[in-house]
Image (tube, rainbow, N blue to C red; front, side, top):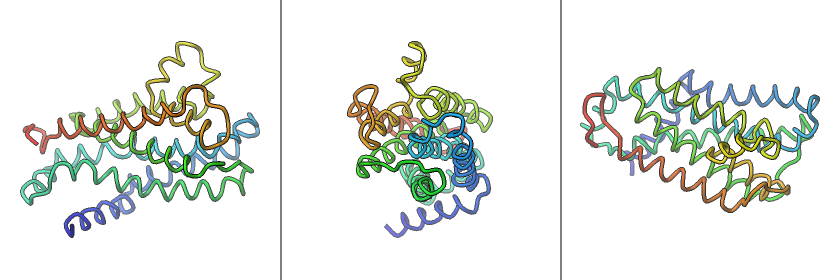
Length: 248
């Protein structure tokens, strides 16, 4: 337990001291939130209604998909994972620890968004806080799982960027963050169903914000949990201690 706590505290500090992780965990999502909050309601007043869940979802996407995979690849290729193996650190700890610390940072960012959005942009707050917290946690769990899986399967840092962008860009364009699901063309709507953020935004609307869901929000919750479970399971199964050996 002491070793776990020490590892957790170390990873938590890395998320603040590492400039790249600090940018992805805090500066990038909060800067984007402020920019969208000041610009988008003037262009589309309806955007204000989805500002809080949309910007929380964006923060999760940025911190996980864009921030988590590269440090995992660098740690594996530089031999850090091998030193952990020699000292008896289990592979499951190396998989879950970055996810846990990233979710802790996201909790802070979510708190900042929720506290400032009504004051700065007159954005409505959730009507059901329990559902809001559950959906936020499930989206973070699903996206963190996918980010860890990318970090495990990507052979180098360049490929992490390609894999991460292949999920991040569609999530932003058709996942309900910038454009409502109901406005998507039929083909785009079908593809959007495969994105975790689509289900998160649907659940936010139907369960947390007091709006109408486009499809079953309960199934959206189940989908987020299943994606997270499958992603972490595959990451554990495919985990390798370095770039040459594949044993767990």
